[in-house]
Length: 371
Image (cartoon, rainbow, N blue to C red; front, side, top):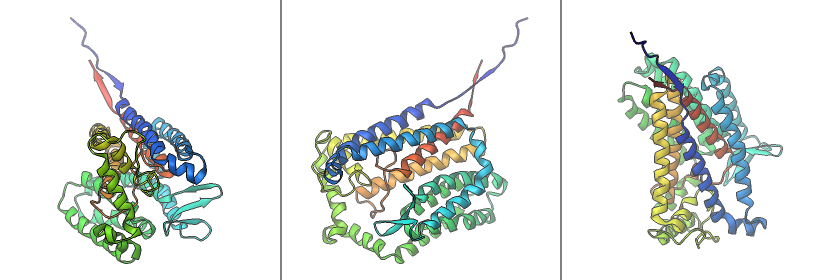
């Protein structure tokens, strides 16, 4: 009698996701150098100034990604409350004179000696980890309004603190939270109320900050808004002049001092100008592929906690990409949101890479059965 074959399980690791992240980072470096060389040479006397700093940021991010991918994602459960409190305190410290530093009229950065970073970027990652644990604990009661109220009461103080200086990041954090709750909750009718409350929340913060109202006016009438509408108009000129296949890599004219922050928020306009509509669509398809890989991991994660971590990271990337492209194409008012993996940034790229490490850690928990 033949012996019954034993099933063997092999650990899984999503190399497809890893390769997509690496490709996006490399593409980002190429476009960053192309979009920033002129500004870097004029401002710092070194055309590769931003490129060198971004390579440093990615190197640091690679260390974070390696560590978070190597460590079992369940390890972070132990620190979810502590991490939330630390993130909350760091976000408060940006308002302390001498520690917090201004960016475009708002306190968004912390300066601790030679180190400067944005606590709001840390808050995004912390919210994902915090909500994953909290939702898992309340998973049996997620259909009840009381559970959503408890989560809202805990989360809103952090969102409010961030919104006071950086409304766009607060919107992203709220979006991450709503997506995670939407996936975990069996009743979708509650989310109509959540969306209404979210719109009211954003409206209140717009009314209490004059410069946000000015941004809306610049969005509606950029041609008459003077300096406030200049960035929007120059970005649209860059996108329109690129045509179907673009002017060619490095051939942008709008990056020569015409498009402010061409290496940051507006880098997508330079991509459109140099690589055209074809290049822009290819980049968007890469982000779609990245999100699809995360969906596969979330659907096959071995527990709810891991699945929610991936959903949170997926929501973060998707929301930020949509907001950035919507801003530069004049679909929504200017929000100052960068394009993940592509735009120049320190804290942002480091912690986005750390998130990707967490997603890869969750993927390692998936088992493939071999007969």
